[in-house]
Amino acid sequence: MTLPQPLLIEAVVADSEQHALVAASEQLSECLGAASGIPWPGELRFCATLDAIGKSDRPSMVIASLLPELGRAEEPVPSIVQRWHRELAPILAAVPYVFICTAFRHVATGGGASGHDPSGISIERLRRLNMAAIELSHDTGAFVIDIDAVLAHLGARSVSADFRLASAAAAEAAGYVIASSILGVGADDCIPPEIQERAKQHLGGTHQLVALIQRRLREKAQRARRNG
Image (tube, rainbow, N blue to C red; front, side, top):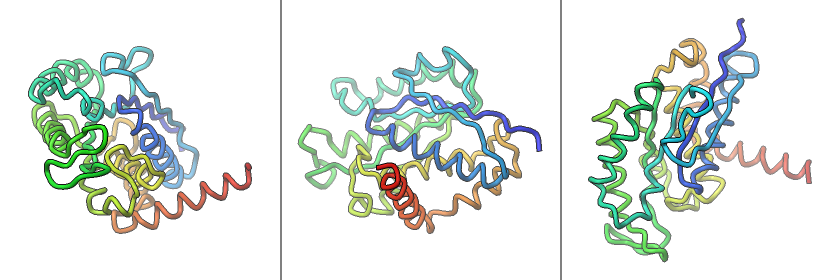
């Protein structure tokens, strides 16, 4: 088999989401290696803004999150959508696979559509930003990574986290959604179709997600004990 093409992912996400991107990169590496029988090279780079994408190398794919916009309550969501249209345009022209993540609609305290956490973040703001992600996908052709749908199915208590994805379980769950979304779009420019299919089988479906999270957390704990 010829050596695989390195997979370079550039991401613009909130600091609290970076652990989920790392988990996604690890899960992709694991399932692509299992599918191909050889180590699959990859690199994950975090960029501060969309303008910084592709400054050194052309990435294989780009992952962006609207979560950094959550704290900018002074800017209306329609204005954010217009700005993202402008900033995404050159990226979409240069990179074949661009993804926009939704955010988990759960805050630490409060409840209902008007719930707020101690920092003043509202579920309503989260909902509007998630709708903006869908709107941007429809308008631009970017793919959606629906983290909210899968984590809502698992439940906030199961992953012990809110929209910040602060727990290890939440990072692994969101990482799974990201990895499965990448494998599900038909990224034939980066990964041969037959490898994608075998990698999807190795990663497993959402009904196997709890087992995957438990396995990965157990393996990380074992590595930490060996290295400690």
